[in-house]
Length: 113
Image 1: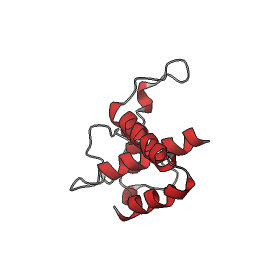
Image 2: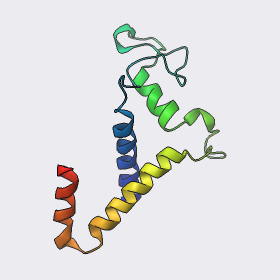
Image 3: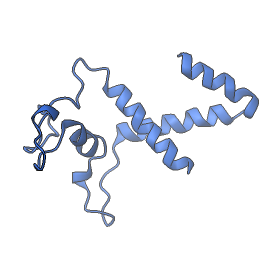
Image 4: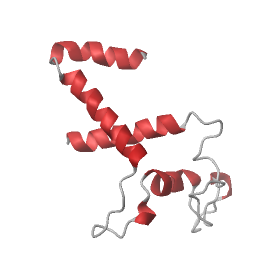
């Protein structure tokens, strides 16, 4: 269960780092990872095959699902995402290192930082 939780928090850290751009990358269809089917949310009609920029950002930029052939070939490891997940594991390690008594101090530091 911890692996799943840390992976999802790693995705959140990746999103946090990506959000420091002047224009959020998941709000427009003018990026290199977008497909021809990408349509902004304001232009998507019900029952259409168009996909949103946010969905394409997650599936094509963050996870890079198009490079995978399923479980037979998962695709390459994305270094930026691996670094985010590794940073989360380090954070969890140091928050549990000295036991439960110091966990409150570490989490309060993370919240106020």
